[in-house]
Length: 148
Image 1: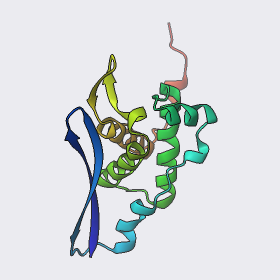
Image 2: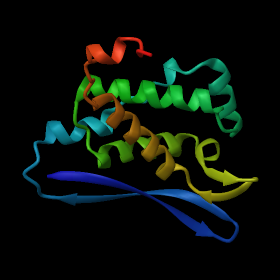
Image 3: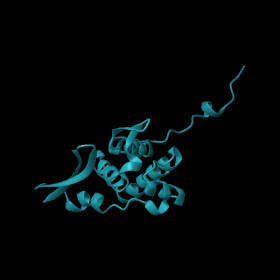
Image 4: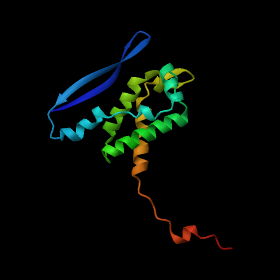
């Protein structure tokens, strides 16, 4: 039995509130492989106190702080599995945005254009892809100085 949680927003008037729903299905997926994401601890302890203060106020982290959170999160994921899958990365992004929705929402000039989990999912997934990219060997001709 595999239980999957879904995140959505419920709009009423001028406010939106996050809503989690649950769906269960029978699957042949190994439960220990699928369940790690639900117990995954976002590495908040690695965040600077300045970033945590901003998040507590509902303000977005600066780009360097956000990148550091993405790096630390993917480093933690890679300690568990080398192939997390986009859905699991998306679940982690949901949990980050659910904890600090005002700080991670997508906004342009103060106007909200998204809840933030989509862009954070892309950042996390891109970081994972980049860490899994094969390293190229330098060719001896690449290191020599150009001849005139």
